[in-house]
Structure formats: structure tokens, C-alpha cells
Image (tube, rainbow, N blue to C red; front, top):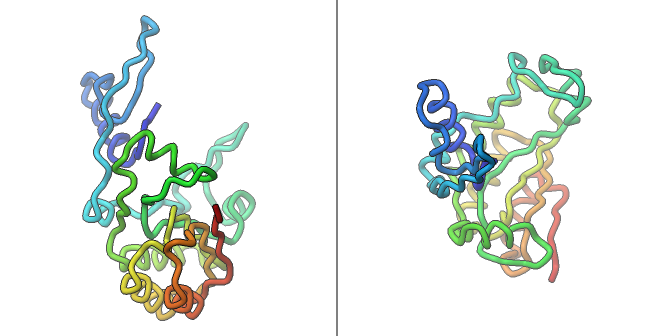
Length: 204
């Protein structure tokens, strides 16, 4: 079982398996060994802003396989539309300093207090990922931003993101992570001007 963020942990696991090393020591994983003992390794560190900006883009190209409940299929337009629809999901930022009772973020914070720190690559990284995706999937009609709390970002960052989105993406966006303590009129105005059509905000 992968515990915490898995981008770096999975690479370490695959490298250990490929090189014949002891994969049971891989950070970020818990294992059930042959004797039935549970091995609880320490967490892999949370990725920094710089490290997030060095990750490869999500791979939804047509050279990958898609696993269903009873089959493994090649990804193509029909499979994408039937399983995902005409939307694309993406993150601009990770983490949230709040611990609301209705939100899963409290579990992350119980597991690792460092998750309260909001981390994100340069906004150009997110814009470039979307441009890359749209080159392959020209039928994408809207984008969902899955951030824990996008409104916690500074007005400067949100304004820059909104400007680049409007100039280079131009698709409607749905944001699922707003927090009432961090929303301002200026932030909302910038995002609405860029194409925000819907937003979800938990109120406690």
C-alpha cells in the first residue's frame, strides 16, 4: 500500500524491483511480508514546488492501456469519452492549511502535518500540460481543477493563471476547492473572466 503522495515512491519501488534490490524498504509504502508481518516504512517527503514542476504531464495518450473491471483496452477517443467524458481533470496546487470536519484534508493532516503547506509549480506548468493534452484530445470541452483549496493562492498567482488561461486555453473551468476564509472578490473576478463557470465551496 502506498502511503501519502506516490509520484516519487512508485519510481523508487519500480527501480528496486528492476534492480533486484530489497523493495520492502521503499519509503512511502507499507508491505505485508511472507510471514504476515506489516512493514511500515517512513513517508517519502512531500514534493517541493520545484519537484512538482519537473514531473511529466499526465499520460492520457493513445499508446497506453485502460483497465476496466473485466478487460484491458487501448486508450482511444471512444474509451476516453465513455470513461471520462469531455472533461479533463488537473491540479494547480496541492495542500490546504485548514482542517474542516467535512473534508478529507483532515485525514491528510492527521497523517502528515506538512500537507498543510500549499505547494504548486509555476502556473506555466499547468497551462503547458493543458496545451499538451489538447493537442491529442481536441474534443475536451471543459476542465476540472481538483485543488484542495485553490482560493488560498495569492491574488498575484491567481491573476497570472487566469490571464494565461484566457490567452492560451480558453475553455470553461470548474473548480472544486474554494474556502470561504480565502475567497476575495478580486480572485473570483479574475477566474470568472478567464472562464470559471462553476465552483464548489464547503461552508462550515
